[in-house]
Image (cartoon, rainbow, N blue to C red; front, top):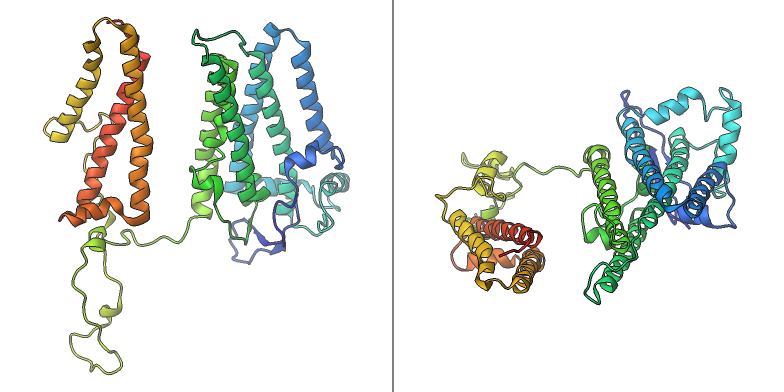
Length: 462
C-alpha cells in the first residue's frame, strides 16, 4: 500500500540548525503500512518482523496452554509491560528525539549508517531496512534522519503489535460468559454494544491512517518535516485527537463483552496513559512545529462584528491633496485591546461545577434550587422503588441527551450562520449577551448531568 504519497513529496530534517545552514531536502520513499507488511505471507520479512511475529505467537500459545488462574495474572502483567513500553518507552525516545535529536545523534555517534565507521551494523541494517522498501529506496543515499525513522518504526511495530495481542489475551482470560442480568435482552444488548464499539474503533483507526498516512502514524515529524498539505477530514472532523480519544473506545467495547471490572480498570489505565503520552510527548511538538502564524492577541472586537461603527468614506489617494489630518496611520490596521481586557470582559468568575459559586448571583441561586428539586423529586414516588429507579435513569438520560444534542445543535447553528448570536442582536442585545447566556446554558446543564448521573449510582432506598 502506498501510504506516504502518490508522487514523492519533498522533506527536510526536523532539526535545529544553529548555523542557519539550510538542511538537505530529499524525496520520501514509499513505505507500507504495518498490517500489510507484517501479516501478508507473500511479503518478505525482516528480522524485526520475525521477532514481532514470534513474540505474538508465543503469547497466543501461552493463552491456550496455561490454566485460567495462571494466565489471568500473567497476561495482566504482560499487558502492563507492553503498555508501559509504548507510553513510557516510546514516549521517552520521542521526547529525547524532539528536544535533543537524540536518536539521530545516537545513530550518527555509533556509526549505524556509516559503512566506514561500523561496517557490520551498516550492512545488516541495509539488508533489514531495504527488504521492506520499494525500488525507489536507496539506503546509501537516504539522509540519516529518514533511515533512523525507518529503524524506529521497527521498534514501534514490535511494541504496538504485542500490546494489541496481549490486551486481547488479557481480556479473554477474564471473560465472563455467565448471564449478568435478569432482564432477557440485557446480555444481548451488552454484546451488541461492545461489538459496535469495537467495529467503530477499527473504522476510526483505518480512517485516521488514511488521513495522516505512515508519516504521522509513526511520528515522522519528530525526525523530518514533509512539504505536503494534509486535509483533516473524516474522523478528524468528529473529535479532537481521534486516534487517542475515540480511537480507544474499543477498550470499553471489549470490557462490555467480557463483563469484567478487571478488564475495565485495565482499559481505563491504558487509555489514561495514552492521554498522558499525548500531553507530554506529542502536544509540545505540535505546538512548536505545526502551529500556524499567530494573529494579533485580539484579532477583532467581537461586538464590532455585529455592531460596526459607521463606515468612513474612502479618500481617493491619487487626487486628494495632502493635509495635516492625513497621516500614514490611516493606512495601518486598527489597534485592538489587550487580551487581558478581552478576558475580563467575557470571562468573569464563571461557575465551573461549584467553583466560584455565589449566592448573590441570581443564576447561581436558581441553579441550586433546580438541583434541589431534581434531588427531591424521587421522594414523591413514596416507597415504589422501581418507579424511583425508572425516574432517576430517565432524568439522567434526558439531561445527557440535551447536553449532547441540544447544546450540540446550538453550536452547529452558531457555526453555520451565527444562529445564536443573531437572535440576541435582533432583539437589541450584543455578542456579549449571547455568549453570557450560552455560558449559563452550559453551566446549568453540566451540573444537572453530573447530579442526575450520581443519583443513578446511589441506591434508592426511600
